[in-house]
Length: 566
View 1 (cartoon, rainbow, N blue to C red):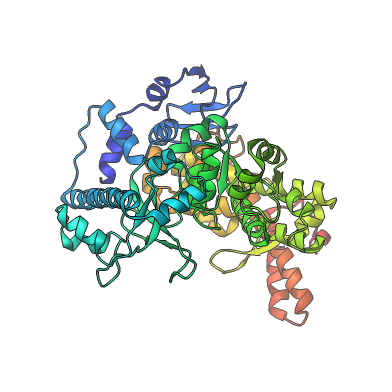
View 2 (view 1 turned 45 degrees about the horizontal axis):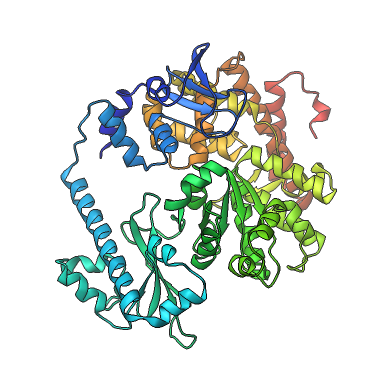
């Protein structure tokens, strides 16, 4: 679908009318207000702007356009939300020949995976006592085997291929499925098969577990990336557990299939598996549509705890809440439940700890206090969300009994992702930067005036800098904000932009704000040059640049006392 059709759907669906059909809105000044449908709250903080056609919750942070709302409220995909809104507006979606071909290819891949899952299930029942014995030994019920479509791949090179050909699947498409090797042999052989479903329930990939210790290959063989599957973009089981996750407002995150199945069978139906030890940004974004509360339940050994810390760091870095469930060193979720039962696990969930507290009390990793602090400093250095970083600094300070100033001094300078110049990341409110962006989103005609005076280097907040660059890049789309929002994939960035758009501009003039930005930039540059002079006291170029900066500062603000400019 091309952008013009998306724009037409956006223009034909008034966001106030659409949201009002889901929940009652009340007029609040120029906007509308309601209790947020995405989190529990007593005082309404969910705002809808009819003029700007966006929504923003100032409680949980969610924001976006009408498509975003329908997608997240109904827990459906972007395309499903788009079709729903198109139907509501009486719009027939016209697909181009290219998009039709792509859709046909995707539909065929879904069909092939569905056939493959049926084939593997049939093989499990008819041909493998070993695989069935393994499942019975792990106490996986027949109901779960059926519900999650667990199967078995025969120890043959062409069993699946022949089955698909008999079902009228063209031989030419098989190379795109990820189910076969480069020489057209079955990829999965003599393995227990776990289908991986998309959030809407389509089978998009498979994971195959070996059944014999002497079997060649790794413990697991997984599908490669295809047109319908990207590793790290899916969560095992979410298609069945998303409703309970939303209802309970927290998710249990385990590592693999069997841990997930044990949790699910024992009534912990608000769980998912990350299909590996690294919880990715994409997985966090997907899960955060259903809850902002993540409970990490990885293995209790050293590698499991390291993985849990890494996962919790990623979750916190994206502005969500992370707690780590501390299993005994010899247990994984599966073995713990088998030995101890549900009540004991509920007790551990109640005792789950935020990242700083978990690290402080951990005795398995063998880290001293300084090393633990360094781990947390590294997490802070990677965080893009200023508010989340501020909160984590406070938690570290309280747990480790160390001043916030001491922590801030350790994260004062860090490299940008592109590895260019060092960026100062002092935790401030970045008020001038925010005010500048609010003005630009409310009156894009001012952009030329701002652009003549400053560029993105004047933004010290990495997130605000990214947004300013986005504004510069998409200036022609600033007149149609809902469409601009749809081009942004990063959900956290989209939420911040929605907040800026819906905010009222400051009473300060543009000239005053620009002046403040310049002053802070020059003073910051001056601090950095002073640090460089300490290490290179004979570099005359540094002293020359220092004089220039001091002159610029004095020209901007006559109130600055010359002798204070060290």
